[in-house]
Length: 72
Image (cartoon, rainbow, N blue to C red; front, side, top):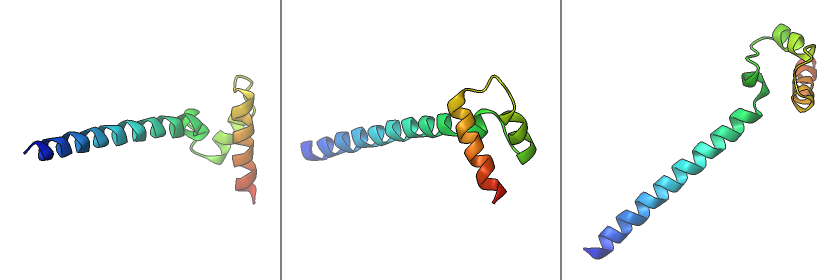
């Protein structure tokens, strides 16, 4: 009986750990997604965003890479 309780506690702890890890990964992916960050849905919005002055340089590099890859 005690063995079953220990296994249930370990399984619950493992599930909580996996949940927290996946939530952390999702936050990281979302922060890296510049298209969602600046609400870009079309190529023209992407071009307009590239010409904005208030966008940080690292985001501009990512957006420029996306714009260049869509040209091909």
